Length: 623
Image (cartoon, rainbow, N blue to C red; front, side):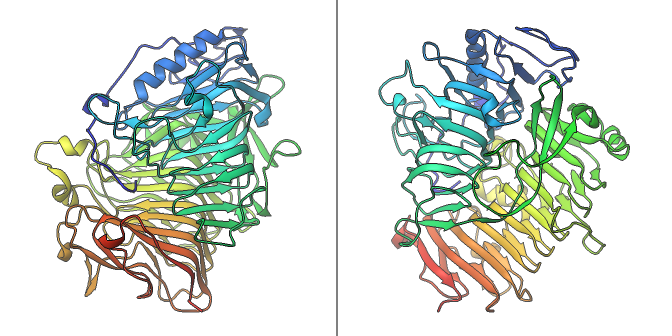
């Protein structure tokens, strides 16, 4: 969450609730809709709302307005919701649907392709204004945890003021994804320039989408993968395009700071829920693809396999882990409905090709030091749309993929895949873990993750915990991501604020496309931030024994607000070998502390003489 500004803590957002006008709530099999009964509708629980084209538009608008009012400031709240749109058309030129998304909210179409659901209007995220009157100190740096996917959006600004009518605004930062969208009719802006400043943003991720003109604006870093865009303007530090038709040229890096890969070496699109022509609910699981460009649905449905919803255990937050594991052992896949799940023993994913799909940012919270999710090293497992929280007692790990010293059988053609899987250590409550994500299996794809040790949260108001100094002792996380497996690929790896190396890469032939890291804000003293005799822990560490590794576009940021005199020797530390290649990496100072070098003692210092001005290395090893 780069370049933070002083902000008012929004205490009243916690636990906020509001009675909703519900159009179609999937609360029982055969749940009724405004268009009549729909036999066979699954029981997705009270926090999944399904709209039909027959639902009165003013009812949809009222429902979404009420949810936004409840969630817009609920950064550390517990409510989670998914709003799903059956195939058809919503809104019109006379009455466009204008939706604003708050925290922990998913909006998705239920079509087999994005064009099966058409929304005429806008679906937006605005800056939050954090002064007492809600009119200034407006930014998107804490606009986390929301999802938009699998629909066609025809931008219609009718009825909005002059500034708001200029674009569809998507002012977000980490843990937010746009996937499988077909957007036309206007401009998509990734910043909100219609509020008072500073208007900073720190995202983000787009995949498998066809998009119009895009204004990047103040977004500090962004990854666009396997998409089509009409045009792209602006960029702050790292703007990355991989497999994107219409991507800008990158010949003059770092001005502008674009990195463009013609194709994506390995990709698999996120599974999605859809309704077929007979009204049956299914989950489409896209196949893994290599060296691809453009959207997966250009000539028809995305290649892959379809799993009927009856093959899923549809879990509720009250389900015990024993029950979930029993259903998994019976051969079921797992669909987690929106809510918070207390996990006192590991959910065990042991069968090849098992799918774990979360709706509405379903959240697994560790209890009694448990490791909430354990994935065996077997082919084809997909975990998508799940947030994993540390609990009060230290967990050894929050998500483990494969055994550390066991046999792992994932395959290059059918990799284990993590899509939109997010981690939190602190924030809504004090959290403790040794490691957030540990990948031991070979052939794993990490397609967009945010691994976050909280730099702010409700612990700021906990009795006996007073700001950064106490957070360093109570809100503990040693490592963000440890990658031990070979041939692991990460597209969109965001890791922040851990107390040692934020990312450690021990496996061979690893590839990362866009790495974003902030070092911890809160070490009390230099002595607390030492690796033996070395000042500080690099934000990205490749093991000295590794012979082959590739990183495209990485950034490590420093903001030692608790003690501005602290130094970190290197942003990146890697073996000095021809097979280890870093392309377009940088460090930057956000207003306190110092990173002395970019990589291995090379590169100028990112210190307070150049706040906000990156220190770039175009290539390492340096020619």
